[in-house]
Length: 124
Image (cartoon, rainbow, N blue to C red; front, side, top):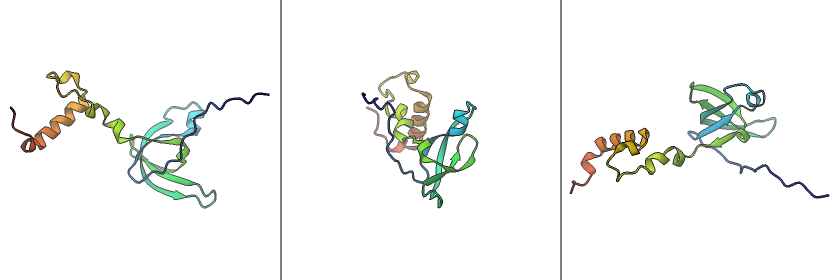
């Protein structure tokens, strides 16, 4: 009898630090088909459950500034800064039309141009 291939990807164990941004899924709400099962959170602390020995996390749910305690890291995924900053990092700076850039990239550039205007080289 042939063995069935494994189709589920295995996520590497990740340890989160205070301040890390994560995506969290409330697994009970998810399996029950209830809304609001997935949210963005910020790691506040980690701790080990004395009964199970499992590392758990306390998060702040950013959309409502709500504390969520005892979150299982199996239902968390990191939100890397590179993903959040991709539009700024890849902004077409050679374009004369700022419409080619996303609003976030334009806002970031304007903010930094004002602040760093003295540090910029003189125009040619």
